[in-house]
Image (cartoon, one colour):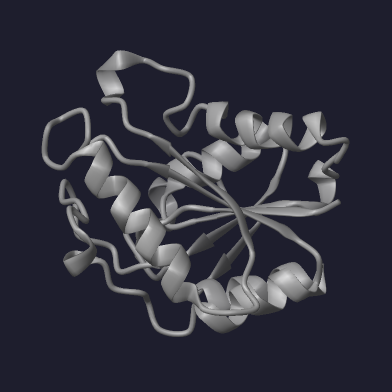
Length: 184
């Protein structure tokens, strides 16, 4: 079984800006051309997971209830033919040093463990982490996944000389990332 792990903000929906959060469904905006690639990945048999840091909850900026509402609406509005296996969030602040906050691999580990309990083994060498930050790339590398850095969110190609972790691939957005995944 192959899997794709996606960051949320900057990959699926518009990046809210540095130190900003998507605090409500009203603020959530799908990026252009994300539904079709998700449909293609679903049809190709990939298990798709969303893996996202959402420290705004522990900072009191928005509630767990609001995060659940955003997630429910996101999944509902993706439309037919798209299967997101599960959405995992880390709601902790950086200083809490939890194992689920990216770049730690706790959320990826939880997803893999859930599949293993159902008798599904994921081939990590054929699986990908797609994100819009170098932290996402580091998470994917630590988890043993191929990584794709998309430029539809926080990170920009002009910063490449400063990257501590190099992605396996780069892409303009999720559409191009899905094309890379399906070719590899």
